[in-house]
Image 1 (cartoon, rainbow over the protein chains, first blue to last red):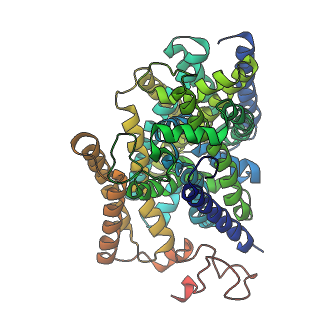
Image 2: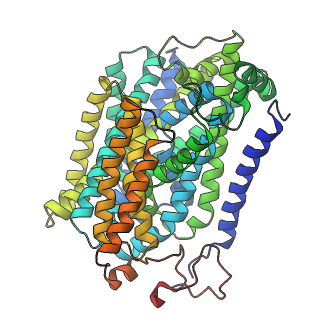
Image 3: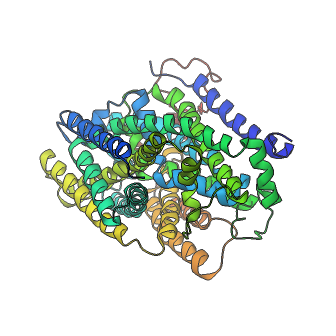
Length: 35
Length: 528
């Protein structure tokens, strides 16, 4: 249990959020600014 | 709860809006200043403008209401809706901003007309669709404003509408996008700080998240699952895995291509804002919306434990946030701040919608179709007149809201998705997409979303959101008609940087190796 949630719910919601944040951070890191 | 402090806060809030309107009106010298704030929006103003355009009062009250009725299976809304801001900036914004600056686009319809070489048919169809969808949305926004003001002051519904309508219309008419974006910065700040300040005490008053989840599980064990089992076994249990797929597409893509959201990308000052704006917009919006959702959970827990009773209204769940704040923060100062937060959320979308209606008509229909010889001054005047007329018309509708208001608003988002997503994405990324394909796809999306929406509401419920069927129809029509019709000229495709990439690999000298950029298709469209 995680804050009263089943482990799988916390894992699924938490990891999807994390993946989204990582992808958006990667986008920012690899973005090519105009010269 | 119409005490002096609340009244003072609301008056102060409205005074700040009017002052911003007056200050920004001095910056308006031509149509570009009015429609696009002179393409001069800085990073934070631009990022918060995108967030505020998506985050409406309906979403603030509705998010907690949805949390109240459906528990954790509805939590995906808190990821999909903030992702709409990121999707809009990445998949539409980067390209459209660059092309828009080069080609002088004022609205998204300028892009569609240019890319598909369809200066009248596609421009007209997309402008009319955008105006209709924005008007439907506006009625919903005014209805939300009046809920808040009636609750605060106990004044008649029509008076509440009139006060808010006049102020927000005046601000938008005099200041254009400058006013909308700067008031957005002010209102976004209030919204973020207010939710960060108020949600934790409400959650704590219900015993903390762990206790809330335990109570939710007692109501329905599926309330703490990531989704409801399929098929839906109750009216609140519709977020099944298959529905969530359509929900993701609807919210992430549908909101991203809504005219009042996507047009903002043309107004950013510099390309480099697109680097971190997707992450920051998502981060800010997601934190705020997760907290609002948790308030919905907390209020459900309080109600189940008999500590709180919601008003006996049909849409009682929409009062969850209001009731939670009243329960947890019995201090009038917090109520006053809360009132301003909800108003800020509603107003920030309302003004953007009104500006979208005004500029779509004045620029796309009046200037580009009906009267090409119209002067800048004339276009500005038409835009302002249309904003006033749109405000008056939607206020009248909101006084006597249509009985199917909620259905109409869902229809609105569905229509946005089915109408705009395919022509925009195909236009930006597929060189084979043709003008005939775009017109047919847009018309099909419009008709199909109305048909499937009607079917779902009045004939038989569909397993996924109706807009997904309409989107598939629109996509199929785009592909088939495009393959059967003549391609657009290479010049038009090159000018609009059409191709399977987000950042053009050709025009920037800083790209040195094929692996240097993410999402960049290395094959130049010029080599095709």
